[in-house]
Length: 104
Image 1 (cartoon, helix red, strand yellow):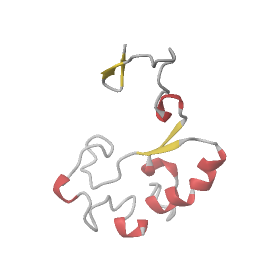
Image 2 (spheres, helix red, strand yellow; image 1 turned 60 degrees about the vertical axis):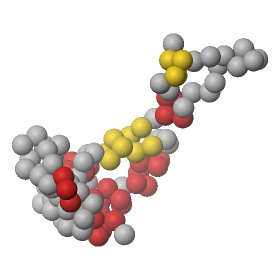
Image 3 (cartoon, one colour; image 1 turned 180 degrees about the vertical axis):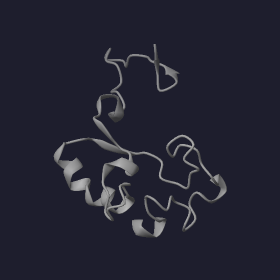
Image 4 (spheres, one colour; image 1 turned 135 degrees about the vertical axis):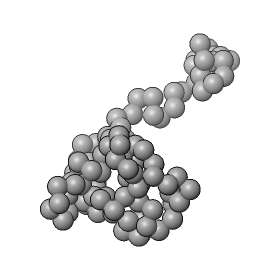
């Protein structure tokens, strides 16, 4: 049996090491294009994802997985990166979901 890429061994007390937090966590995935829409264009956006975190907190989740929201050709619903060299630059996020400046 492996544990974290290494062979698992019991401690001197005979107990296994504790599992990483994420092994038993409830993770809520947010796909920004369909989660919430702030301007009525039918496409969810980053601003409304942020506004919706209170709702997600009520679900008592342990973590949030935010799906990609960078510039895309939309050949595969946003998972195709149009320009991976500028992924963290201002203006590099999808115009449909919002700009990185909105995160600050």
